[in-house]
Length: 153
Image (tube, rainbow, N blue to C red):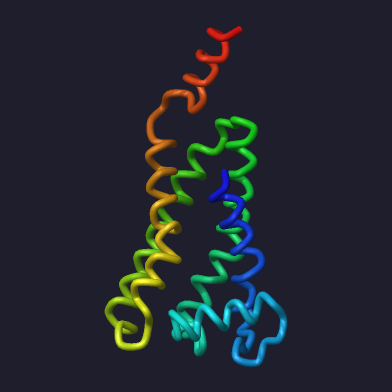
């Protein structure tokens, strides 16, 4: 649940800066300054963001941001409706992070601090893998927890 909340925060608070092409170099607000610090320190691709990355960040901002919140709600309320959209979301998020990492390692290796860029962004690759593992199959997602709760009662 913590990942979903953190990812929703970054989607709705940070990604609009990329979507709306905010000049991070001249940004004076705390979020813009932290974006600039990240881009200037580790990932200069975001200082002059190409259109393909703006599109990917817009996808992270709107549909993924909504899915982060929906997944958070479903996991907190143990709602089974998360399974199918969650698997689609996991696949899409995994795909987008792999494209981003591939570009960074192929094209940006001379400019980016690849270790820090990878460490900061790898949760966006690990979480969809864990989510897909958790959602895969047809067994009720929270059945084991219900059985344990009944045994304790």
